[in-house]
Image: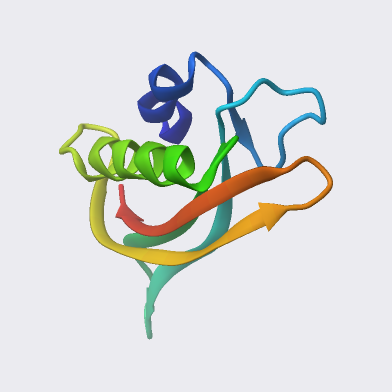
Length: 111
């Protein structure tokens, strides 16, 4: 569902949880941060909210930032699979071992 929206941005190089060490660049990695289920005194109420972090990895910070903006557009677009109700830019990263740069977002989704 999430990777369906993101695959085309990176030629299919979109991974859940972690990318293989030899994954091509640019690439995207998404991680489930939280999965809240609505609950009332009578039990589950059928609502759900999911938070997902998406990391956009590229060879330099400008390319990572540009890719992350395309990620934002893809995730914020209305769809039959889920709606994005909030998005927050998170601090980026620089991996000194690979010399890759990362720009990241955290999205709140409702199915």
